[in-house]
Image 1: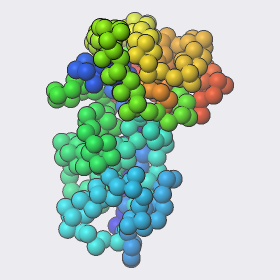
Image 2: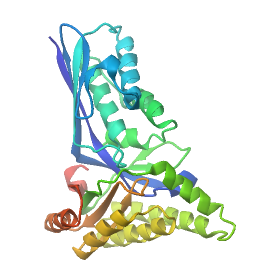
Image 3: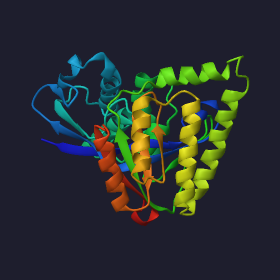
Image 4: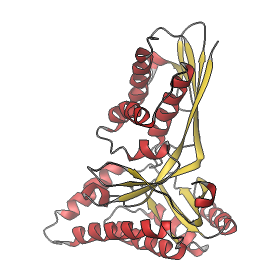
Length: 315
């Protein structure tokens, strides 16, 4: 019986949340230490999925995982194997609905596993277009930034309506990601920003914040490429101030951000849609990163991850 595996990793938006919806740039970075693996095993009968979120026959998959079901069906049809009997096991360290690209990473791992199972090569563009099947069903109109980052080794520069670009960085620092344990509310946060932009009592305020976030994002790209860690940290802090003013932060996020700063972070901010989800902090050394992670746990983070942000490790 044949067996094949595929993998992917998490991602976070480093800077540019919400402003990216309004034609400003955003930067996403892969979290290679936060992984998902899909293992496809041929069996004698049935089509079964095994995961932390659902275990059972594929036909019984809950509605919220319709994107996964359709993706698998399309892949099996692509290889003329709709009747294949298998067990697909998903092992993921990526929490759902935290802005870390969980659905795109799972889809990427599945596509890679299936192509490996049938011993067919898979080019990057075909990977992205196939993952987009799941992402479109799950998210409606995905930007593509999640799929591009969870399968990449480099950060992604993204401007709405323009092709995604990967770029090299040269920085010796660490990211410390903290999960609040509160599900993010991306749609609500986006609507909140839109309402502020249309607020007749505060004309221009929302747009100024959006434009400033765009300026900060452009500056951050330069700092990443020239190992300007402290300047990047201050830029992240400034971006958090803008996001808070836009109304998309949350008391549990701010509690962890304050804890990170008190523990020596060079800068800290929310990541993703906001109103819950995750935050992250920037640390200069591995020791500082561990200190910050401990502080986040002490102040209520349900999970933390440390990721090198360094060209020295082929980030």
